[in-house]
Structures are given as structure tokens and as C-alpha cells.
Length: 316
Length: 316
Image (cartoon, rainbow over all chains, first blue to last red; front, side, top):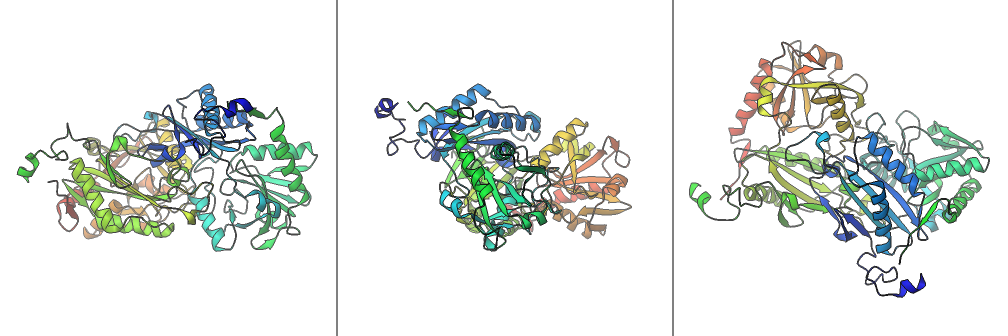
């Protein structure tokens, strides 16, 4: 491994200065291209109709974390919106590993997108789509940066915007319908916070921009079941909580309960387990990341060294 | 005009066989490109967050129809989502006319899009966006083709999907959040129809994929006020109805009223006034396009020759 790293291939991982893929690598219609050159057709229904599903898997210390879970979710999403990937599961695997290998990134955010594609001129029937597959690897993304995770982030419960309801757009089909989430971000900034938590408009917590929400209420860990993305980090934390013998409820999370919580955290492939220590300008619990949160966070990262969950990239 | 058409410039309107822009022309970062080559960055927030607003204006018989109204709507949308076009209104005008001139299209569908742009690596704050402007002209698009408009189209009221509510995503800001509308299209096909009408899930009609809904109920023309795009064709039809002394209500349109309607039609820049003659498999009125609909439709197209509403393109 060390030997191969020192060889002079254009894609070697240590050649970040010369490697054109060091800032990220994309797969566009059969070609690997530097991320800043990666483009999609302006007429793709994935753009002009946001008609697509996607997934993001993390690479940590050179290994894909829970890749089969991410692929299964992508496939379930495709079935739900009656879309078929033009690229097989095996080919997707190959492409994702090659993207990371070329980038040389040891920690990466790896996105796969399947869109309805470019319709024939004037065609508006989605059944006549010609699906397209795109993928890219970029440096790992943090919704809350690690140093901020040590002290916790500041969230607000959005009042002006509700989450798009599941009977309009199914949140289990991971999608780019972020209009509500972006509005929520602006509201959070306006109110002195950094991240919004959206509700269903009927008193229940839904989710935030790119993350699921957990709260420790009366000693019980709660996270919403319906109207949210079925996050892989969320799933991992639920498993870890059950393993640890914590009382865990996957069901309704009322806004009122969130305000009574002694610990609150967010989960995402883009950042892991992220403590929330201020809510609507008031401290959560004692205003420091709580012990249940920090324990789950530490065990979440430990899992990244467990061979059952990780698939190493060959960077040679 | 005839003389200039016969000159041999690469962009002359009659040279459709050789004109690389005949199938459509796009403006991408300062360059005019053939539509099939027009691409946007895969990392544009307009794609990965659907964070944008857009507009579509029609060109008919070589003239833009109600362009200032479309521009005013685009600008209102931009303000609502706190986005600023990197291209001025005057420049937009210039670009749109040039797109149509180069394409040579006498009847065109002209789209302008302003997105939040490509963020810096790892940046998730929309305030840090670097907005982008894109535009293109393609051949005129018909949601219902003219020959089908003569007999009317077949619609269903969607039961499985509701329209994204305005407190999640503001429909007055024209957007690409079409997940609900595409689901509606699939439901319409499944139920033997061609186009869906979505409701707000609480008994009121909202809109369909790319169009507003009108119904003649007990001699009164009704169209929803809230939770819908403020269509320019909708606005034109409301004006025409009032001019004609029709009783016109812009307010709630209950689903129950739609079923009692003697005439139903859709409006869109992509097709004008489109009669609906079958609803949920049953005839509307006597099953033929009604006189009020056909009168408004004819007067809508007449307006396309009224100099007050039209700006001619110079194709020379």
C-alpha cells in the first residue's frame, strides 16, 4: 500500500496538488471528470422537475460505511417513484469505489443520483423518461463541524415554515425538494440560531435540512417515525441505543416534548451524531452535550472500524 | 424582413436544417449554446436543493406575450426567496430576445432560471450563495395539443397525493418542486386519465402539473386564489372574463363544486386555455368543450395580436 502510494500515477491519493480529482470526482455519462467540470443537461427532469431520488454514503478512514444499507434505500426509493437505474447495482458499486480511489479522499461524501432524464422534445409523460445516473465523491461534509460538536449547536423550531407533508412528497424517497428546508435555514439565521427543526404544522417534530432529530425526554430517547427520511445514521443510532439498553421510542415526537428534553441531537451521514445545546435561544439541559448523546456519538464513530459495517477502498 | 431572411447568416430563422439552434438555444454563463449541449453544474444548489425560481414566457407568431408580467413575477419570486439575479432586467431582456432570434423559432417556450449557484466546498448556508442565471428557448410546448383542445382532455382529481402546501413551499414562487405533480401524473394514467388536478387535502382544488384550474359552476367562473401559482394565463383569463361581464370568483374552489361544473378548463403558458371534457371518467357538462371556455380560448389567442401585450422579435 505504501509502495503503491509512492508510484507516480495521476490518481494516486497523495498527489493532491496535481491530482485533478483531489477536490472531488464525478461520473457523468461514462466518464470520470473533476467535480468542478461535472455538469448535467439543463433539460434533465431531475433539474426542471426535481424528478429523481438520490443517496449519500460516507467514506471514513478509507472505507465506505454501511454501503449495502444505502444501496437498499436507493433501490427502495427508485421503486417508489417508478424509476429504474440505467446502471446496475454492481456497476454502481464499481463507480463509487473508483470515484473515491481517483479522488484519493480518505474521508468523503459520496452521492448517487438517478433522474428521470431528458425527455423527448415536448414530452411531459414521466413514463416516457430515459433515466440517467450521476455520481460524485467530494470531501466529507459536516453539517456541524467536529469542534462545534464538542460544545453543541444552536437550533430553532421553525414557526414560519412546515415540512413538506408525506402525502405530497414521500420523504422516505430521498429527494432534493428543499424549498421548505432552505426557508427554515433563513428563519433560523433570522432568529439567531444556526439550524432549523421543522414540524408537521400539527404539533409534531419532523426533521431538519439534511438530518433527523432525537430527544431524550424523561429518560427515554425519542425520534419521529413518520414524515421523515429513514436516515442510515438514524437507523444506526436506534440500533446502538437498543444495544445499550436505552429506552427508545420511534414514534411521535411532540414539539412540547422537545422543549422538555434534557438532551437533543441531530443525525446525518454528513456529520454523524451532532449535539444540540441551545434551542430557541435557551439551553437544552445544562447547556452542554449530554452523556447519552456523547456516548452514542462515540460508539457511532467506533462502528466505523467494525469490519461488519465497512468496505475498504483500494487506493492503489 | 424577407430580404434579411434570405441572407446567409448561421442564425437565420429559415435555416432550420443547418441552424445549430433550431431545436433550441440556451444561454449558459455568457455563451449561447445549442439546447442539447446546455448543461449546468451538478453541484448547483438549483439542482441539489432545488433552490431557485424560474419563469416561462411564450413567443407566438414571433412576439413575446406579456413579457413584462413574466419579468415582474420572476422578480417578486426572487425577493420572496431572498435571491438576487446576477443578470439585470435589461440584460435578461436582451438574452431572451437573442435566444429566440438565434433559434429562429416563431413559436417558442422561453425559460429563465435563477439558482442559488454553486456553494463553496462544504458550505451549507444559503446566504453565502453565488447566484447563477440560465435561460433557454425551445419549441412551444403544449400540455394539451391543439387538436386535442378541440375535443377536450381527460382529467382526474388526485386522491393519493396532495399539493405541497404554501406553508411548506410558496407556490407563488415558481419552482421545480414537482414530486407531488409527477405522482399525480402517474395516478392520472393509472386511472385512465391524462392529467391530474391536485387538491389541498382539505376539500379544495389547488392546481395541476404546470396549469391552473377554472370551473364554470352555476353560471359563475371560479378559480382558486390560494395555494397556487399566480399564472399569467390565469391572470389573462380572469381579465378577459371580467371584460366579458362574466361572473368571476377568485377564491375557494371546493372539489364538490368542480364535480358540479358545466365547464372545466386549464390555463398555462404551455397551451393557453385547455378544455377538460372528462373528469374522473365522466363527462363534464355535455362532454364537449363549452361555449364559455371556447370563447375565452379564442379571445386569449386574439390577444396575441394586440400590440399592447406583444413584443416582436427581430429575426434579422
